[in-house]
Amino acid sequence: MRTYLRKSMPRRQFLGALAGTSALAMSRPTISAQDSLTRDPVSDLTARLNTKIHESRDVALGILKPSTAEIDRGMKLHAESIVFDAYGFGPRAAIDGDALAAAIESGASEIEIKDMREDMTMTRFVTDPVQEQEFRDAWRASGVTCVFNNAGEEGQDPLRLIKRLARHTYTTDLMRGFVFKAAVPNDVRTAKKQHRHCYYLTGNGVPLVQQWLSVEDELRYVRVFAQLGIRMMHLTYQRRNMIGDGCGEKSDAGLSDFGRKAIAEMNRVGVIPDCAHSGWQTSLEAAQVSSRPVVASHSTCGAIYPHFRSKPDNVIKAIVDSGGYIGICCIPRYLRGAGDISELLNHIDYAIKKFGPDAVAIGTDVAYTSQDSAKERAKVPKRARQREEFRMLWPDDDFKTTSQMNQSLAWTNWPLFTVGLVQRGHSDEVIRKVIGGNVMRVIDASLS
Image (cartoon, rainbow, N blue to C red; front, side, top):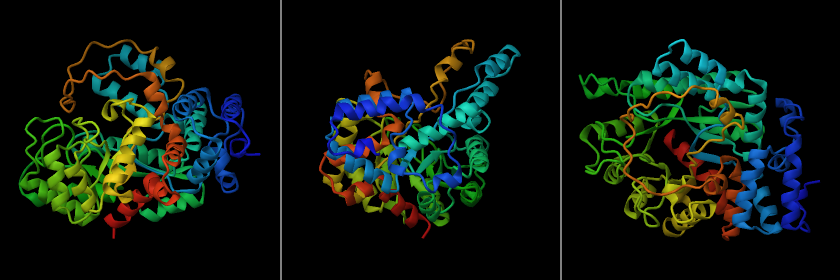
């Protein structure tokens, strides 16, 4: 029986049902690819929630206070729809603290330690059964069909960008019965039909050889990375580069001549220009010159709070006019106000009312991390303080993020984002667009 769908069940009893499932999280065997074709996707959203997922649900439900009817409709709609995170991360594994500590003791360099740490969080669930089960449980509870997954460290160097791409390719090669790399939009539709999950990959930079012999020579790796599966690229990341100004730069000088050529090449090969981390003028001009949709995959509405990572109305309008969307993120300091799930919904409401239902998606920019993460990190010796990385151009910010804010916006709370949209009075058609349909429309258009 679907306990959370019974219209007679009061909310307190619903919360109790969620709590009661957590004890089963580690006892149920892994669902096989064949079993996944016959399982109930609605029940999956609340079955076997571990303590971390349950606690985040409890916080969000306490803020939303939905009725049983709203829960009923929202959960069913979420389970039936293609749910596409417009920018985010698949669930993360815990590091192997003993292995990392041993590497540090043996004199491993900072680069090696950083690579080990990242590789463990992005691939360890392939080889560790406990991490694998939690990885699967997080996907199942989220109800997410596909994530536009971060598969490139911030920058332009192809060797820097390729590392995360390799890790996610490895994961999806070895776990393809459960999660696979989508190459074209119909792969996402196939994943939904088969009750599987997939990644559509994005790189956090345009790969440039930085030899500056000619425009064509400089941009030749855009096509190479597209062939490797990258379907979206950040134009800038915080700082100024040869394409344009990043969102952290005070000058906000806009798109360069070379940047216009870069966007033309991205249009040609079917890579979506993403201005989420670009300055407002760069974002505006990118949307104006692109012949295909431009997106701000994980941002907020500057009219509600003008954080430097937000987009003002004129920029959002240009993005929407290009055929793109603004993806509202789950970062409290960008959302401001209450900084929680209610504020996420406020930004979505504003964008829908101002620009229409085709203008909005949800790009969480957050990841589920294993319950074992803190325990494993505690095994690793503290390192000497490092200089701030060049890419991290973040203006001063005195906003205080609370654990309640973060818990309410947890990646596994995706079903409650849908419930919240039901509460706000949106139609099923509009909600389907926001939670996945608009991303599908744009990825279709980018390769048409």
